[in-house]
Length: 356
Image (cartoon, rainbow, N blue to C red; front, top):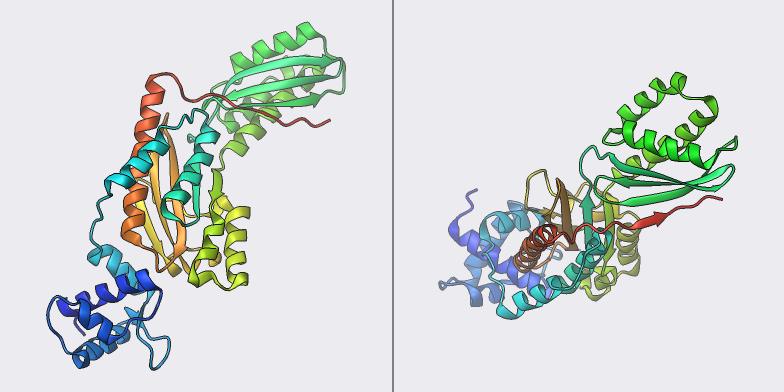
């Protein structure tokens, strides 16, 4: 069965009407919106064909039609018109981008909040770390005879510190010497290289000092392994409650819980893709099977990529969401580029994780 231009026009009318009203669309409503005069009987025949082809669904025998995920995919790929942002929309986004967001974690959180406000759907933001991150600097600060604080700065300028303990007393001057050794031997190495370097030094370092060295290096490895995960935040999850698709409290709660508790499992664009739209079952995670996700990436600099995504019903206004998200992502790329030139980014954030 051929997907004729008239079938495509009818499909486009059904999808855009359903996006606007969340109600099944009938033949009379379609006839009123077609560019050429077509009888309702002909439209009903075309609708039946579109259902048979899998582009539309009929919830009830006497009801109108609603789009299927296959129909939405054709719409996004072929039928959706590129939407230009209004002057008011661009000013709103530009005002948000002018806010001072110098700290990377702050940018991620703000970006998610702004995206949710711009589209009125739940949103999320992530920053992917530089691949094969390494330690840039070590500092060891004595606390008492058997305790010290290890401070490590990674190559993306994140600072972490932890109170560590040793089995034997360590002098302050020995800690200073070990800090020099760490900066000479363990910076700019990947995790596997650090482990091998530590074993190489086992027979060349006094046992008491090697214990301290081992504790500090293993803490640095833990920091690097933790940094390999995407840092993710969600915002606007309660926007789901405004949508007719999520009037069922259990359904809304399930999706909201997934977004809040597992943000790192939300979709990311394919490598090299500026924007990606995932519709219904195209989302791998079961919690997202009845939703659509629009996600855009932006350049943070220093081989790092950030992303912002929007989660909504399959009835999402794809054209508007894609236009706003794309403009916002481009603005973030420009903001990071400008701040990097001015030396404003990144500002390290200390993450004191002390275990007594």
